Image (cartoon, rainbow, N blue to C red):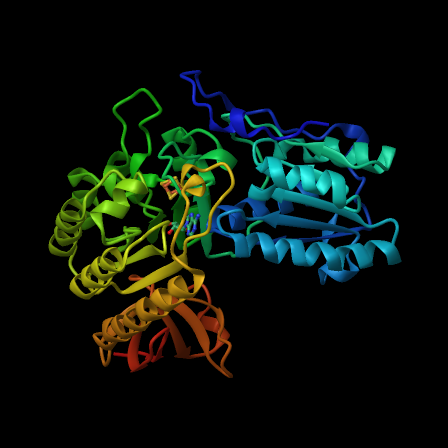
Length: 473
Ligand code: 5AD
Ligand code: SF4
């Protein structure tokens, strides 16, 4: 048994990060423990978690398990959880009750909780005391140990908690079972050292650790040879890529090298404005296979709040970066994240958020009400603003977000744009895909186009999506 420890999770040392090429392995004796049995993974949260679930699927299948049709009939249920806001928590807590019933009906069922909630001291203590029907809690740093932990639980039939509040290593040899044959997630960096005052990620994901360029490039080359059309480079803070490698190799260098593999589309998330270099902008502008789409969280329009958030930039600095991107990368689409109701955000602070939004007119924004996270500095601030007021602010903001989203889409009407067709659309007889600028398009075409990048004439635009037809010359 090993429990998470908030104090340890907060620590940052100058210890070298270990890059481990053989840490994951499955002993002979358990090679087939999953034979004839099924697993399901319920994934919550960000793309990082989505990709972690692909690694977990890879592990499960190497153990002989096959993917179940739904979680309610599977032999193993894995909850890959998110801790970023209270509502992500609540969703998981809700499903725990449902799982209890399933466990009562089927005593052989094995239940596993992993992801960011598994790294939270308070949550794990709660599971230990109140949720004995969760068999395994395993943390984000040691998912490679899943085979051994699973073996132990099957043998001992006792709850096993295996979580380390470490800064973390880089594990290079996890297997992966990808959800798509055309689009792939590629980790370039783990963890975060920014410590924005509201954010739990630096505690749940550990110190910023970059993968070595050669390992990333090799992964992209293999994907390209396997027929993948698009890679998304993943990290909490990709603009700071390489800073921990003790070399001069930067995100700009990495983007250029990934571009030279010749893969057709390259995306990257998430960019922190603080580390966004001119070199990076130049490389994005120079190479056609680096998509003109940038997710650039602003979080607030008020310098006062940005300071309390520990975001390390002012609105003027953010604006100058934003305009530089617009100028140097033709047609670039920029999206953002905004938190409303940070503790004691005044009406004037919020007005500044609306003003900056009206000025920058983002293509889209993901907007959230501030949610206090245990252990973060912001959670200690006594907040005088009511939830009602915060909800009203969110509603006001969302109205302008929607208005500009529609306006941004309007510019595409009757234009022809490249779309990577991904699969059937929710609409009858159509397929769906994304433009280079990350706009969702439903296209009148059949499934033979899936996996291809095709020119699409946009015939109708809405707030969240567009309709189109394939353009034939
Ligand atoms: N409350 C609300 N939103 C948050 N985010 C991160 N932490 C919190 C929090 N405590 C938002 C930020 C971040 C996005 C992924 O989630 O906007 O960019
Ligand atoms: Fe959280 Fe800030 Fe790190 Fe993003 S940069 S993961 S918001 S601490």
